[in-house]
Image 1 (tube, rainbow, N blue to C red):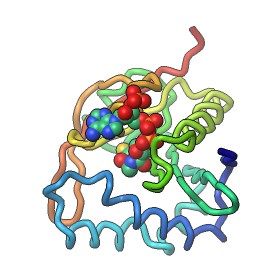
Image 2: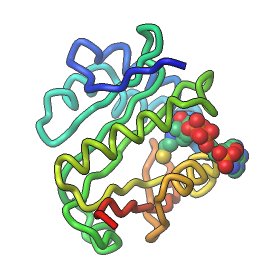
Image 3: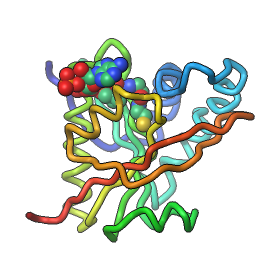
Length: 179
Ligand SMILES: CC(C)(COP(=O)(O)OP(=O)(O)OC[C@H]1O[C@@H](n2cnc3c(N)ncnc32)[C@H](O)[C@@H]1OP(=O)(O)O)[C@@H](O)C(=O)NCCC(=O)NCCS
């Protein structure tokens, strides 16, 4: 399958928000309610929010396209996590957070996710980052397996709010330093 990975632009806000709304529920645990998921999509994943992310110099949004359609996206955030407990879990600096990492369901199990992650790793190494980190729901075993097979290791846990509910994540880190 031919895919292209590259930075998204402000003109992609609507299309990425559509992909985000379709894929975010897939990362949520079974007890997440429709209302809480809808509230999160409204507050965090709207086209308006993506147009803010896409103009924020500390963030990078990458998109994967296949025959012109967006089939996946990720958002990277450079810099220290604001939560000191979370910052303590991360051992390799400077670090970049993979804040969002989503592939449309029809492309799971293809090369899309690996191509997206390879582009993230390449950018991070070019930017002299020592590590990447992310949070993943503790019940999202598919994503955990994907990250583990690509070199991420669990370094701790955190909580993550979706609407009125608080979910439990594993925190995973990948060492990018030359071996
Ligand atoms: C996470 C995601 C990007 C991974 O991409 P993908 O194409 O599904 O990943 P892969 O198929 O390469 O790898 C998934 C692995 O999990 C395995 N797997 C699938 N379902 C599983 C399950 N229920 N439990 C455990 N492992 C599972 C697959 O067999 C595969 O492992 P293998 O390569 O050793 O066989 C994609 O599934 C996705 O977008 N999911 C929905 C959104 C999401 O959860 N994003 C992550 C937020 S942190």
